[in-house]
Image 1 (cartoon, rainbow, N blue to C red):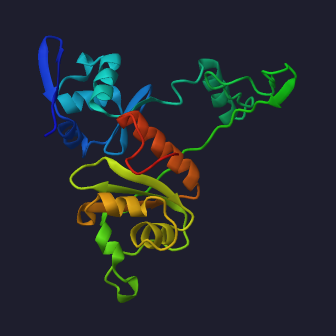
Image 2: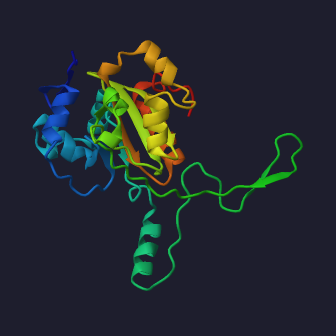
Image 3: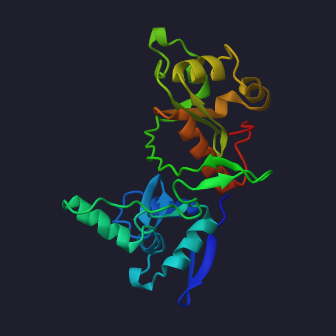
Length: 256
């Protein structure tokens, strides 16, 4: 049973479970994110808006720092808007560029070395490499519905089983009902070959097929997938987010 999170705000005792927060925000349209955001049901909301709706309080009563701490302790991902981390002079330069003015100067991410800075080898002090900071564009995943593991054993030619995209790259996840924690998160150059034939049916060499069959009741397993042209980057980020939330990789995932 899910335990509620309790705290006091301005003398008022508040208590919610994670599921109650998710249900409260399920049909809410997010406002524009200026500084900090929280992700609920796969949607990013301004933390103050999400807190006010989820806990039924006035938005003026909400302190952004307090809202972030509450959501983090409840297990929701909280992040800062890229626009919020951008220096004011850079935002001004970009606005001028959009109006036909000067070319924008992109800021250096905190903690990264300056462009074209030459690092030295720690062993002998000689120049070792040129350090370059890359700006990686976001990856948007449109997940399929959760499909029962055993349904994937059916023959698609008889039009009785679910259709997994053939020859398309992507990522996939496996869970055990009724839990939402992932058993494995992986990537595929060909989703049908990797998920249906290797992971589920055991054809070929999938690293977790035998372990899942030995340790799980397949009648309770669910699988989903999403297309992406950058499966390795998507898998790495899914692993990172999972570790941040649960403190470990999925049960049958040994490395990222």
